[in-house]
Length: 153
Length: 123
Figure 1: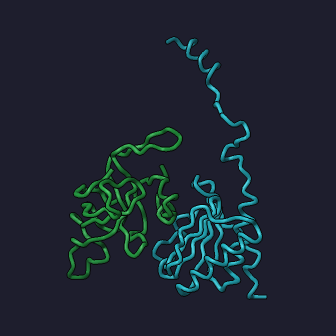
Figure 2 (figure 1 turned 90 degrees about the vertical axis):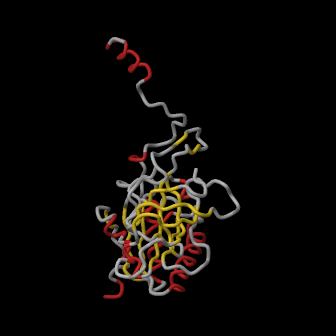
Figure 3 (figure 1 turned 135 degrees about the vertical axis):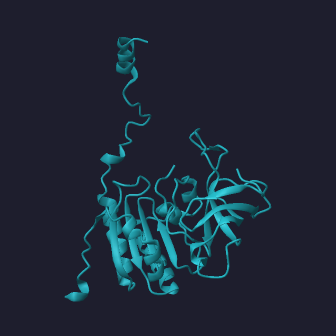
């Protein structure tokens, strides 16, 4: 094939074909709703006496989720309590249920609540230090939390 | 697709290199990506056991993350990898703190999102 022929094919078929024109590229997605939902869920965790709450905007680095919330709890019942409170609050305030829920009710030292665009990890301190997701996603932008200095005021 | 007797690569930083499938729960003959199996350690040993007298050769649960047999998906595509690879489990949690290879996104639908969080890429 000559270059002119290839250029003709590129001009004819080179553009990306999208079956549904309403579908947007991942870069064009606005994460405002996801961030608001994640901050609301982080506040629910904070009200359940969780510690070291972090909300990370991981969308530039991974494609499978937009925002990740990391929470530390201090006992296995508290891990379950935080997970169930988050699920209840998401259903009441945002009418959302976890799409790929990991928690099966048994007490665990690491629970994940997966809402698709927002993934919430609840650890015990030992597991949080061992798996070190904070370090793994350290380049992600940390979203400021409005309740971070509540105890100091 | 993994059957009883298959040797698989362990792709986490637990210290184990090769493990052999010895049981597929659920009276099944074959296991696919995202399925849990029982393995026996054949080469390498856990880093946690270095200081103890136990030198590996233990029996653990594992999650399959890659298979040589092509996996068909609902969109019509097929995906296969170079090796059969798995990740070791203990009490429902990964033994290693990092996964060293890409994992199939079937794990998310099988309720193993925590493995996806530790993986470098999702295929």
